[in-house]
Length: 144
Image (cartoon, rainbow, N blue to C red; front, side, top):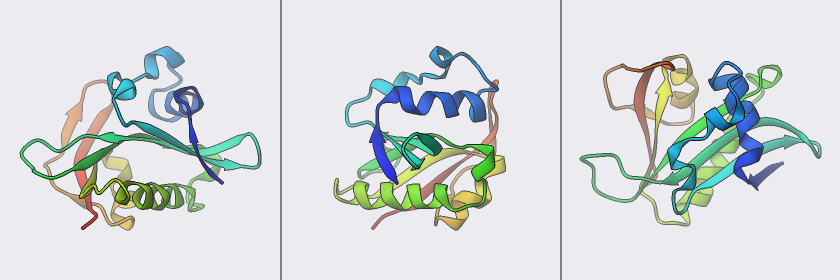
């Protein structure tokens, strides 16, 4: 089951999967207070979280139109390849389309590029390094 959740529910997986177990307060992004932000979690049962992601209104520099940025997507290790991340993206796409956004974009870790391609995202940048995090590409999913 996918739910809209508060920030506190996404931080443990961000820490574990994206920041090598960093303290939760170090896993808060400056954009986590952006207007229009929402966090999603895919729950297995009542309490177990398999996948999380954060979305907020943000356009890509140099591109017109309304966009949302996807940040902090993480799936816990036992749930890799089970389709929970894909279902969470689909849920977010359906929701974001109601906001009349034209695209969703992200800074995708190089290791996650194939996952995002399967969801319909396309690479639109050269590979670049985020210090302390690793190599990434900018990817976009056009909604219209």
